[in-house]
Length: 517
Image (cartoon, rainbow, N blue to C red):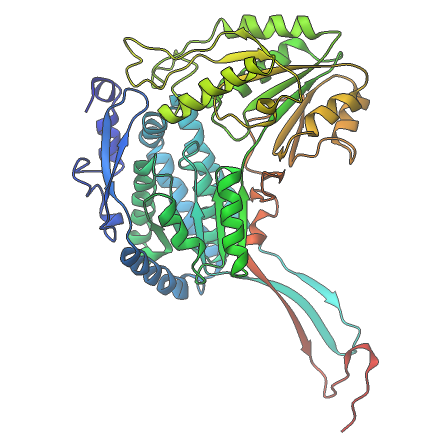
């Protein structure tokens, strides 16, 4: 263990999470099916090796699927409220291990410890939501046109749900899918990002503990590890009716094509190029808070991170100066140290993407007003720490149209009415999250109207990030159209069935058709 890992209790956190023998690829009993190549997990915090896991081979994968399909036969027959109680127990275990799991998320992914704890809290919250949902998987009753008939519809579990998650939320997104899928009667096979495999191992260990205590088959929750080739095992597998995939738009298009080719269902949560519109009636203090957290939280590696600030020309300089001043107060460093605001990017590939974005915006005619750069020296040995940067740009710049997964914020100026600002906001390929800062009721309502934001999430007087689990999370256009978490997002994990019961001694046909025998 590195000095930072020791000083901040990562070694004890790993033990609490059941992760042992971390340097030989046999980190947990729950990935016992894996016999492939060794995957090494390095922390972006200090560049140290945290541990190793084994990738899943095709033969391993088939054993996992056998375990999952067998478990489904048992799990689907358990009453939904009883499944909900299992999810409740899982949520209670997360409460017990919240600090340990939050530390691992922070150390392996690089987000601040507070954000790591917040991510685990999201897991707990979705478990609480799912427990209530387990008693509310409602269908509908309908009036039949035929006398003596009753019609209704009900929902049944799909089967095996495949989950492919990204590095930036290494545990929460899995839980959004899994908690709902479990209460719906599905079993889950999860491929976490190969950049954060130990977070996946930790979650699997917690789940396995709960299922073992209740004498339920371990196949209800399955873990596989590896790169995109392992993900292809799931996308091509007709035994998996639903693939939930979170990641880049490029990846999502590949998944969508493959799954659609076998007439499967896909739930896609892809790229975001999120904007905050700042009108003349905005509260500047609230604007600065929302914009700065949205742009630099998780080092700009949220799908809901604020990429564009669209400011009315009459207050442009005032807002610009306020945001620039706020950036001067940011503290960059070890994310486990709660005094710091910004941690590292996930790896050096992300750093290169960040540097290219700053280069491109200047080449297109933009102006850097808060200088970026890669940090080096003591505390920054991993090479993954960068300075959050701000650039003045124009909406039509190619780099502004592109999602850069790093802390780069573009300031854009608009004139005229709110319609012009909305047109700028909507004129990108992505459609995840959006926000408007205004105290003008008409502007706010127009932004939320059919002629307003074209995103799946539209906020008034809050930023683009920080969605609550109670609402359905997802976006439109190149964001993929998926919906996870709250509201009625549970329905995608089930199949709908319409039932008609004839309780008479006659058999009248629909639409009044006569067929006498």
